[in-house]
Amino acid sequence: MKNKQSLFHQKKKLLKEAGCDDYKESAKRLFSKAFGKSLAQCYNYQIHEGSNEKAALFSEMVSRRAVGVPTSHIVRSRSFWKNDFHVNGTVLDPRPESELIIDVTKNLLFDGMRVLDLGCGSGCIGISLYKENPNITLFLSDFSKKALSLAKRNAEELKADCEFIHSDLFSNINNKFDLIVTNLPYIAKDDFCYLQREIILHEPHEALYGGRSGLCLIKLFLDGVNRHLNKNGVFVIEFGKGQDFQLKEELLRSNFNKVFFYKDLNNVSRVACVKKDT
Ligand SMILES: C[S@@+](CC[C@H](N)C(=O)[O-])C[C@H]1O[C@@H](n2cnc3c(N)ncnc32)[C@H](O)[C@@H]1O
Image 1 (tube, protein in one colour):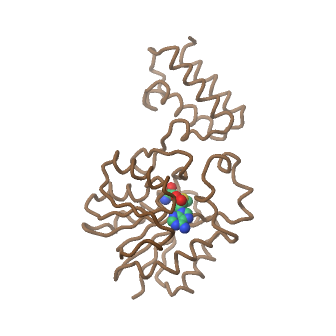
Image 2 (image 1 turned 90 degrees about the horizontal axis):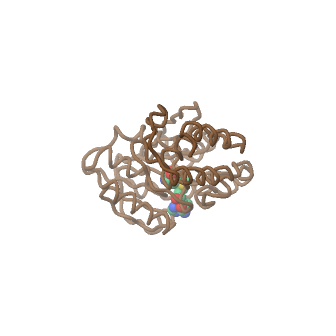
Image 3 (image 1 turned 135 degrees about the vertical axis):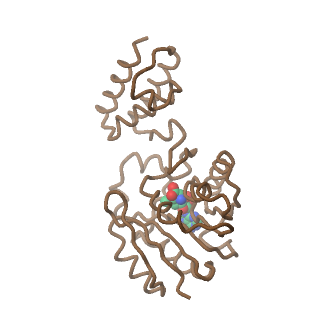
């Protein structure tokens, strides 16, 4: 077996040549998964023991990455906020920009607060909030049964006590909440073909596609959300780049006047925090 350093560099180069944008990060994550070492150990290359099987596993993982399989699907997990979440092709890969929802809401949490994560996917948003305050009462909903079952697995492993609701938006939800967080699909029909090939091929389209304008599901959400918020309730919603103006108009049309917009780390307006008006 080659020494690990040269193997690592050779595979990193291979990923770069295969056009993998995040080749450095991918190589490190795959290496760390195959060899069972932490990323920090990989960065320092202070690893000398190993085996041919692990090297073969690393090479096989790199080959899958080189043909476009997302790294998270190969290692079957993705880190989000402070935890790792199981992911697979049935849910959207948690995105770093969605962590802004946690940033915006973590200081609003109080003991006994009823929180709904609508369109929970892997459960990353709701479960991260629970980990910030385990005394909230958490509900996770999605219209995909497969997503809900993965969210259940994540909740069990991360010891988050929550209820699961199979529902198309609010159709099967009868309760009211103090906080609703949601990251519904918002990619517009005309923008869909500009998504990375890897996303189109490996992520569920029903987790991405937001109808002709991108805001179709969000508008339906706005139609129902007020009925499901307690007095002084708040909802926090993620939206796509450049959709803030249109969203603001929709919010005003639905009589939501207390709206705060937040920008992500790339200075893109990404999340709106909306207070119930009455
Ligand atoms: C953009 S993904 C977000 C997943 C997760 N919350 C996250 O941030 O990674 C959107 C999620 O909404 C769900 N979804 C799409 N349409 C829905 C609907 N009509 N009712 C409930 N959930 C829906 C999808 O199954 C998917 O899990």
